[in-house]
Length: 306
Image (tube, rainbow, N blue to C red; front, side, top):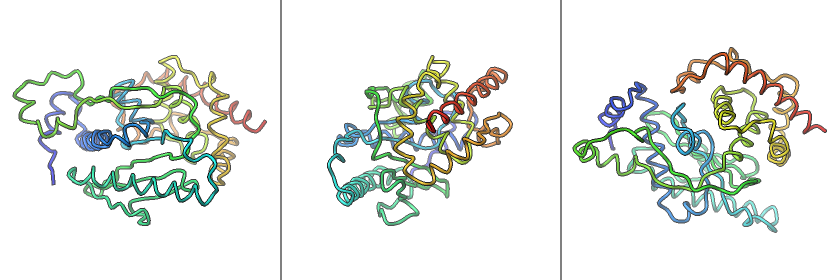
């Protein structure tokens, strides 16, 4: 099993980020992502998205992300299928993904078994439209979540996927010494979500989640700094939201949030969420952003009702 302690210490020294557990997760997730991207079928058929995409492709490491999220690109594949045919096709695609992930994770020291019936490693949701692959290292969970069925609104972007060492000076001697790690922990290109698509799905996740996560609002805060405001995408958010409301747990979560969505800094700022932050947002500006966003979320929820 590959050991990472020396390479982790190297990154700590280079970046001055003394968060070894999060750095190890980032190395593992990035190396896994690199391996997956070198499969042609995956590279052409899946879009990188979510918080990890924001960090690695767009805004840099303002926070750590501890999972990987993707969406299947070829949505026309599911058109015209009966319910049972669609279910079989979705499970078949999940089985292919599970085998790919098992092969990619083997030499990373990650525990994963490509048996889609084993809920310790593979979990289906939303009528097999969503599949979560659960990988383990020393008891720590790393998740790869894939939306096989999704409403895609924007054209995907070819993005450079970056690491913590991006822009950091690495000598030839260091590069040679850590060659085994840097072969995978390196920059490469991958198809990814447009920022607007990420924003719409972030809001959907917030509106259909029982407990809010501070990291999601930090992501929206960064998107607003990039001039992408929640209120400008109300119609697109509604289009993303409506298909998932066929599922009871999402409807119930939306109703709970409609009655009372608590996005105050105090309610969400638990120690783990704060630990993920690399750069702290200006506290007063962030508090003002949360208050404004809370109002906009309520308006969007009322629009969905109408």
